[in-house]
Length: 255
Ligand SMILES: [Fe+2]
Image (cartoon, rainbow, N blue to C red; front, top):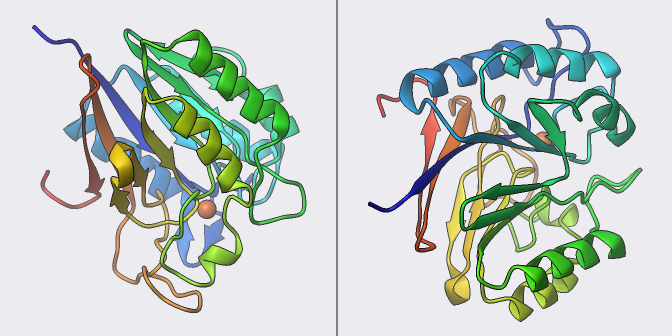
């Protein structure tokens, strides 16, 4: 029987120190709780949870305390990385003890999942520091026989929306240089764009996932909300032979 590892990705919850805090009409603690509840009814248990940034909207310690409260006690490891709205120093204080981890590397059987920081102070876009690119290159060099899924916040390819493409991963070419040296990279996974995205150029699966709060309208010139789109998460199955089966689950849908 083939081993299958089950992951759930939650991204861009945009929490506040105040649990009643609202972003663009959504009470973000409530929409995160709703999304976790949907996942627990539909895709539970999981081997691990991935959270790909913008955990906080107000860069407060309290936002991370609320995040801990939402996920603590679920009995599943929660692997986190920062987005442009986050405060990495507070994340490193709050999210380094079990079940949480910060910018580590998740190992699941034959799979390796490096979680990278592209947070760049004062920039809504992001950069991977040379140290992060070197860490990724070293990990992949040391594990040539393991399948890899690389996780980060910012999009390393065009999003299709002009306004979002002013705040991308600014040194995506350097990430692609590393990825292209290591054919065991099966997938890149990110948040930031608040919409579903899937492509598979040159055999590498590219995935972005809607937010647990409000969504952005795809393929537009200027910012627009995707009104009517509910909160969502992504479920992912990693197979021992390197195959990936995944889909987005929207809250309120029947799947
Ligand atoms: Fe976000």
